[in-house]
Image 1 (cartoon, helix red, strand yellow):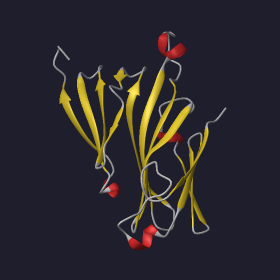
Image 2 (cartoon, one colour; image 1 turned 180 degrees about the vertical axis):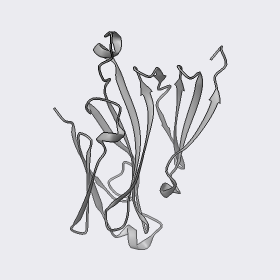
Image 3 (tube, one colour; image 1 turned 90 degrees about the horizontal axis):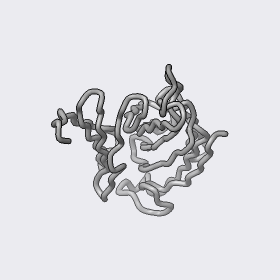
Image 4 (cartoon, helix red, strand yellow; image 1 turned 120 degrees about the vertical axis):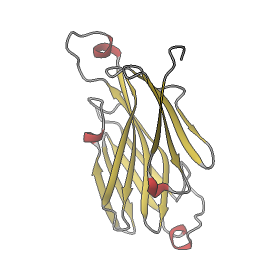
Length: 180
């Protein structure tokens, strides 16, 4: 069963009413809806869509949420978290029974509502031994998530600047000490 979420958005993360610095954008509402991995955008009677299934590591979407959205003169930008069961692994094991995969996906639509860029980061994975850490952290200026890639012995920190949503994700990587 697909998870279906509808979100009416007015220019700021997880809010139903707020103002944009861009006076033209502040008058325009858009709505975003998710049906599994299918994203639909509607604004000014136009619509656009993106099938994000190829960006996800899970076999299906059990849970999804828009963690950031913005509308600027250059387009519409969303960051969406997807969680679902791990794909079956040879030999069975815990990942086959209880494993989860978690992706954070950045999607950019141009002003005509055509998807122009999609970036996905695997921030939690049973099959690839990625510990999602404390989850997504947000403040007024940014969102970030720290995750440990245990198979590679690296810690990654994903950053997203809310004031520049068109830039997408930045990821820093550092070797994990044996004590981490």
